[in-house]
Length: 90
Image (cartoon, rainbow, N blue to C red; front, side):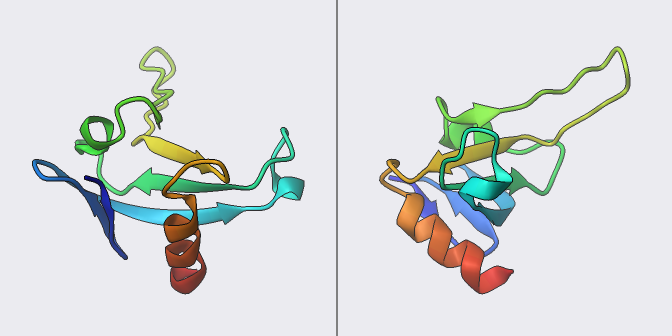
């Protein structure tokens, strides 16, 4: 079971420090409501918590390193909880 906390995301085995950002349809290319959860640390367990939603577009050939993120759209079961946290923390 995934738990969204103010500064972290955790399940039974893993915990990742994160911050939240709520996106509006105007700020996205696809025009969808979404909340993005960004990992705060380079080495994190966010990919182990959100196995299918996790993204990391690191390109080591150009020295571009991304810490990783998860985008939750309004149809995701955790979207409302993430939106509430994103609104409170920003």
